Length: 173
Image (cartoon, rainbow, N blue to C red):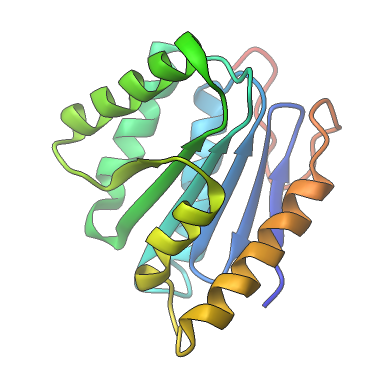
């Protein structure tokens, strides 16, 4: 099954694959981006009972504002048990990456759940999500298909590109 591009701007590309929302982030995310993430998850839930997420943060991605983080925590909490897992890969090293991981752990404490997990790389993230991806009869084939869809999505995202998709975030949002 091919991935479907849901939204893209200079900071993030959001794609849908089966019941997975994939976010590839390279810039500062604001509250409106988080609302677009929520729309993507709710779109998946129109045709699936459960949704999962794969969040990829490219090197140099800044920490979102406290307002954006609060909006993220709100919608994840609102999605409740229909959002079964979000795997996050922070592709950076050093102090910034450590700070990002601390922010994620803080969100888990605020949300009082462990829906959000941090993994070392894309391969680990894909494997962690496979049990929650709908209609998987052959895990090895599904892993390969997911990896291929992810590669296509990432190849098509060029940070700094024009906005595409429904309801792009407002400037300065």
